[in-house]
Length: 134
Image 1 (cartoon, helix red, strand yellow):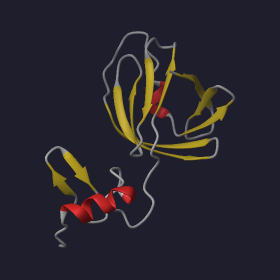
Image 2 (image 1 turned 90 degrees about the horizontal axis):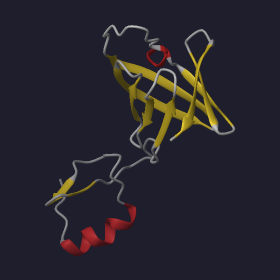
Image 3 (image 1 turned 90 degrees about the vertical axis):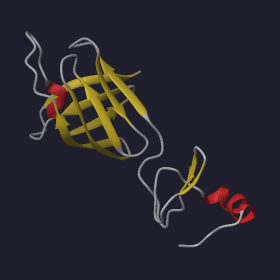
């Protein structure tokens, strides 16, 4: 592992990316620098919401992970975007029973950006929900 001088660290800051790690990160107090050898996952975050059920939220994080809440259950997984098309890979999702709830967000597999709305589909391609940017 290479040991960098403070001057070398400052010179490398222009190419530092915090979201991807190719070599062990260099930790300076609370600052962590990582130097990737290839492009990483998406670097922006998006938050989408739906009113039915109330407080449904989909948080697409810049590191390629997502967090979801359908008003009853929470889940997580990974996401990718290609143009206006999204692919969601479901990970862990709670399985609580809540009266009158439709856990449609836990079945989301793909989505398409249509104007200002995100149209969500299940693994069969059936439309299961619509969300707006928050």
